[in-house]
Image 1 (cartoon, rainbow, N blue to C red):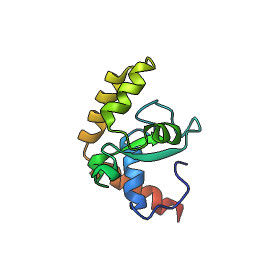
Image 2: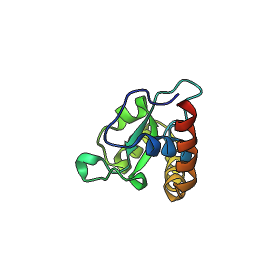
Image 3: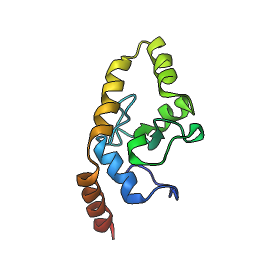
Length: 118
C-alpha cells in the first residue's frame, strides 16, 4: 500500500486520511501508490522551521520529491521545480485544494481501512 514503516509522530489513521484526501498521489509529481510510488508525508512548512505536525501542514509526497524538497521553504522548492520546467502553478493550486478539504470524511475511510485489515 502506501507507507509500510511505522511512524510514531502521527497516528496511522491520520496518515491514511491524508493519503486519501490527496488521492493517494504525490502532490508534487503526481505519481501514485498504485503506480509504485512510495508515499510519505511532507510538511508544507518544514518541522525544523517551526511547522506543525497538524494535517493542515501535511501533504502527500513520494519519497523522491520529499527527499528533493528536504527542509526547503515551499516557495524555494517550487522555484527549483519551475527552473526545471515544471508547472508550479498547478502544484500550488493542488496544495491549496488539498489543505482546504475537511479531513473528517477521510478519517472515516481510514478507520474503515484499518479495521478491515484486522
